[in-house]
Length: 237
Image (cartoon, rainbow, N blue to C red; front, side, top):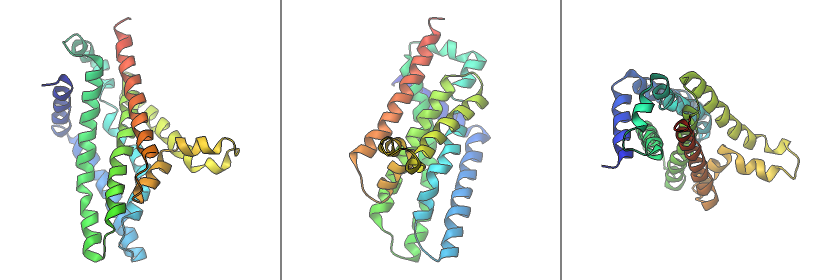
């Protein structure tokens, strides 16, 4: 089996053998569902997933760092990372394995929210295009946030620092798009392009634009590359 998959399976078992996964997934589902979905549903009397999707860029800024902060930082702190990288496994496989484990937990979390779509379908017509696009966008945006978290965890030995760094980078990429109109006109297109949430808005409307997909894949690629280079730099110290 590919070493990345072996590492991924080990991390997934580690997630679910500890209360971390259950706490994070439960808290996310309760906040996303109980507060942002059902509250809006009963207050506005509108059977729609729009409120749920609108809050995801913000909630992911907390979910992703919480899931990824220990992936590499704790390995560094405990010294197990040095043991791992001396084995016949490449650094990029370590990073990819950790990332895939985080994505598996993200997919599990999103799978639990399908009950929201079922609720909307039971109360009224469900617009399949935006719903399918919204969940595809959540996987892409979540992957971008998770990759930033993996990168941040690779840069430090302290999981709390990793959480703060991941949150800060994620928040910056989110807020720059929201405040794009405050920038000079010459810079606004760049600010809009860099905005994490602006790309998700397009996809969640059911419009799959290759530019939005490429943006998220680029964030993942760059973040995982930086994480890999960080691990490789340890071999030369």
